[in-house]
Image (cartoon, rainbow, N blue to C red; front, top):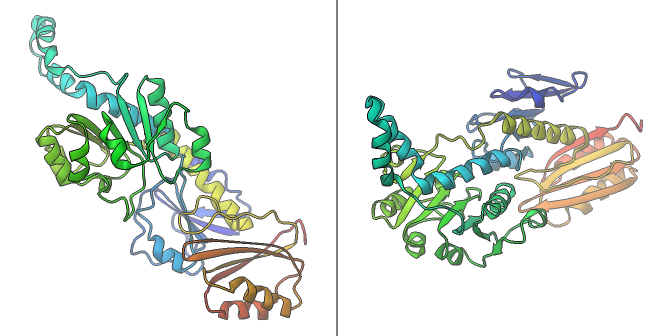
Length: 393
């Protein structure tokens, strides 16, 4: 019986996928095998030794202490693409909001509510104050061509925009889904210099923090508009406020408000609504649950942020899973110990990601306790786990 602890309210569409004869699911379970979370912060939480995985029902994992999890061999999953359509739709809305001064016009119109029969005439006289350009024919720079970025780029093409994409790490899958009308940009500076609109769709990391700053704003067109629905830290806040005040930039739409941005006339602050649709919550929960079940029952890893993607079709009754540091001769030491215990390996796969590696090893025989103890003592091995498949035993 696997124990799943839920934190936050998780969509029933996901939770109902857990077979109740094999899974116990509750928000107050001690010693869980896995944690299923949305936005609650897990920083500072002490994880039990039983914990094998954390699944975030969403794309960002800033609320999870990924590095400590890696050191304990805890696999951290996210659900990239689960909320992609929701964020894409908000990005398209942000393009229009940044361009047409729709919000300013609505606010002004609301101020006329007590003018009775004068309203139609006042509207006709005052509407010119809220004029804004169309997006058709303008150039959009899409920074980051993952699940969301590709959808935004494709829909912007359909709206008649000239789209240039920048992503030096674009995946093969994303490239297949990208419209052939999206022009590839070689450098960030090059794509920014030609853009009327810039939209960010990259994760927040040390290398992307403050990605757009005063230096980047200087090379952009006067009046260009920036959309940031990814992470607030991707933009240097003080410097974009200065660029907006000087009218170097025509507008900034962000999903990450601050007191300073709320006071900025040319900033439009959305209260973090990017993934706030029932469809996105359902999709992310379903993805997270499937990934957890696959990992707990077979050891397969997909969409982990700290360990490599790894899957092996099981053709033997017993399976050994090993998390280790990515250092030489680890596989050799593991197989030597198994051979010394008379264990016949039928299949093996080893993948690594940065400092860590993950092994799936299928065997004909159960691995005896003595061999498992030997493996645990090998320097560099972080965690081991065994699985037996009822279909074989």
